[in-house]
Structures are given as structure tokens and as C-alpha cells.
Image (cartoon, rainbow, N blue to C red; front, side, top):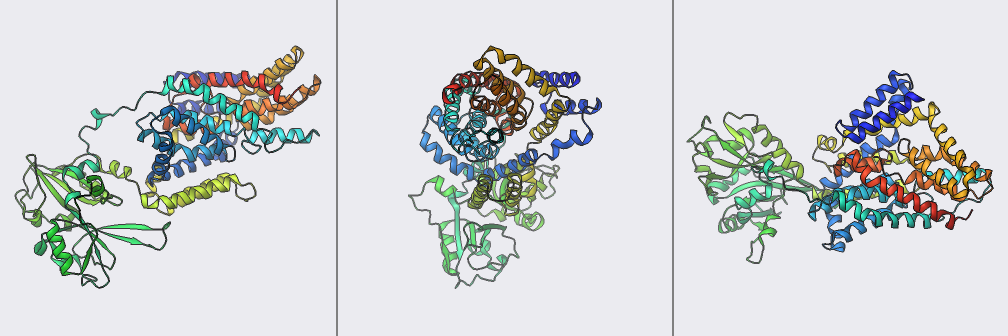
Length: 621
């Protein structure tokens, strides 16, 4: 027992110190429990197969898909319009919306739903996401107190009361308590979060000074001004021909950037957009959309000769931003490369180099001595030091960076690709997310929450809400996963050695003689303390019977004492691993263990004091 206490205290010290990664500290604590034979290997590794841990992995993937498809930005922009430019209004709105959802959906599912939306809102509003994410996690737990099904400890005390022959609690018996929790949380967190997390996001220009975004490249080379979309009609003579047969470059001085095809257009949800580089042997089909660059007169002549529809006329009323929206970089991207003096084909024309045939890459423009060459590129000779604007699939662009002897790829193309949202998949991502939440919220659906999350995560990958499987894996924050998985067996060690029972029983029984209020405070803060190291459900299971017997022992109603157990078990904010929501927001908010102490501990204490005073009023002794 004493060894377990020592390991727990040592881990807490290192967590608060913050100099060693939290996941490494948790693993070291787990190893010590194994070395001293407090836990068997099966018990120690059980955390890595725990449904909560598996659910967190799936929720990271679901949240990543919500980001990748741009769904988070769509929802966040609507909430931002309600909040206006007021950070305070946005803060309160996030807390209220999260608490309302948390009343009917598990707190983990609530945070998974709201986290990408809140991050997107903060970035769009130029605010620090850390100001909102920890309150988001706390609000989900507070919302869970509003209804009977909001959080597992509520069901635990319901079972204890029913088994003891007392009148069961109704679905909304918890509502007054939950509303007080939410109100207290908002009032306390407004100044605390502003004090510790109100710093603005800094633009790291020093680190990324030379990297240009895709939109910057589009503006710099004026791609949108000379870009036109042409659709192949059923009666066009182009249908069935290859790109080379058109001789579009020689006869019309135009360049085909890409060919875009929309598959399954009859289904908005399952619509898929396929982009193709216009290679010479690409066969054109009816309804294909050709993205061509050149003058409008040449484009109009080409469309007229082959009976094609010009989608864009570039009227004077169009704004520059509206023209930029024509360009979307889903599978195909753009980047810059600098030609080195060692390039073997210096002073050869672009046509002779055959970039498209050899590397499946198009040349869209040349920057030479601060001048931009955008027309008749095939006849331009390449010079050492030329900067070429290239276009191709993201994988083909990244392959060019391997040959640094002939050219240098500027920026980080794959990182830019990761920022591109697959917005045409947003409706599909929304449908999967809603089904996941409904499955978790409706009890009579015979699917466990962890199963619903795994299904949703796999569907996000299979339906193309990610660019590839690797992109889905990158959304998982393994530090948080290992932290939770390694700390979960600590509760087993505390229960196995009798440490948790000793703490709870001695504290509660020792306070019984001082009156019902002091006993209530003792039960509340004992539960609150244990929940920092044991899951809230396990703590409620352990302390609910003790609270019931303590109330019966001094001849008072057990209701306020059992409510004290469930509230204290759910309102644990001073530790990142006390509840899954706290751990989920840790990486996105860039929090340290000490941040939870600074913000969560004062809230936890204030919440406890208020509950000790309020519970006897709502449920008299």
C-alpha cells in the first residue's frame, strides 16, 4: 500500500514539474507498479485495451475528418456570427452549447464533436484556442449533471438508492444541480481562462518566412486572372479524343492545367471529385471540366470550334476572391522549384525537357529576375536560378524534392497539402458524425459507444474524408493516448492494495460526529480527491455505498450525500487524466499538467464549497 502511495505521489510531482513528458512519467509509474509486483502484466497493460482509450483513438480520427473536410469551419463560422466579435460572448456560447449537448451525449462524445469546431472558431477569430478548450472539457462534464443519463456516476447513485429501497431519481432530478454547476463554471472560468490563456496566437514568421501558402502562389502568379473552366458537352467533337489530338497549345496558345470529373453526381453525400493532370494520352469525356489558362479570346475560339461551354466569363463585377475560389487543390497542388546551375537541361526549352512526360508535372509560370513569364511557356528556355511554378499530384511534387542536385523545392508541399480541405466531403462527414452521436445518445440502440466511435472513424477513412490512411493516423495524439492508458491501472493498484478504501472510509467515518454538513463536506472532498487518480465511475462505485451508510448512521437523508458523490466524481478539473475530456483537449490546447492545477483546482474547490452549501437546500437532510 505504501509503495503504491509513494509511486502515486512521485508521479504527481513529476507531472506538476513538467520537465519530463507526461506520457513518459505515466509509463515509468506503470513500470514501477510492475517491478514491485503490485500489478500483474495483464493488469498493467489492461489500460491499453480499455474502451475509453480505444474510443479516444477513434475520436481523434473523427475530429481530424471534421477538420479535413472543412465541416468544422462551416459550423464555427455560423456560431461566430452569433457571437460577433466579442470573445466573452463566444466563450459563454461555447460553454452553454457544450453543456446542453453534454446533458444527453457522453462527455467524451461531446468534446469530440465540439473540439474541432472550437479550434476552427478560435483560429478564424484570431484568438488562442487554449482560452476555450479547457472550459470546453469542463463544460461537457458540467452538462452531464443536468440529466440522469448525462454521466455514469449519476446512474451509479441511482442504482445504490434503488437497491437500498429508496425512491428512484427521475430523469430531471439532477437538472437544478447541473444548472448550478454550469452557472458556477461560467462565472469562475471567465476570469481564470482570461488570466492564464488569453495570449494571442503568434504568427511564427521567423520559422516560415520563406514558405508561401497556396493562395499566395495563386496571387503572385495571377493564376486566377487567366484561368477559365470549360465543360465538354454531349454534342462536342472533343468527346473521346486525347489531349494531344487537340493541339491546344499550338493552335490556341492555351494550357490545360487539369481535368476534373465528378463521380456519382446524383448523390450529394457520396459525391467525389477526381482531379487529373492533363497528360497527352488522357482521353476526354462528356461533362469533363477543363481548367485552361490563356487569354479569354483564345479560350472563346477554342470553345466555339469544339462546341464547348465556357463556365467562367470573368466579368468585371467578379472580385478577385471569387476568381480564386475556382482553384481547389484536392489531389493536385502547386509549388515552386529553383533550378540549380547543375541542372542538365539548362538553356533547353520547356517543351524539350518534357516535364509532363517524365515527371507528370506541368509548368504554370516562370519567375526570373522578379519578372513573371506566364504565356507561351513551351518555347521558353530555362536558365539557372529560374523559379518554376509547377503543378502536379502532391506525391509527384514531393518526389521532386528528393533530387536536390538539379533543383530545390521551396516550402513544404506535403504540409500545404495537409491544410487543403476536402470540402465536397463535408456533408458525408456530417452524416457520419451525426449517426455516431445519435448511436451514443440513444440507449436502446444495441451498439456500445466505443463501437460507434470505431465504426465512425473507419467510415471517415473509407469514404475519403481523409486524403489517405496516413493522414488519419497523423490526427491521433499518441502522447495523450499513452498517458491515459498508463495511468488507468493506477486505480486498480489503489483498489487492489486497499489504499482507496482506507482513505475514503477513515475520512468519512472520522467526520460523522461533527454534524451532517461537515460529513457532507468530507464525502464531497474525499470523492473529489480520489477522482484525481481514479476514474470518476470507479470512485462513485467505491464511495456511494459508504456515503449511504454514513447518512443512515447519523439518521439523515442519504440523497444529499449521494449527490455529493456524483457531483464530486464528475467535477474533477485539476488533472488531465481524471476524465477523458480533460485528456482530449490537452494536446490541442497545448496545456501542461500545471495548467490544470492553475485553472482546474480553484474551480474544483469553489464548486465543492457551493455544492456543500446548496445540496442540503435542494435535498434537505
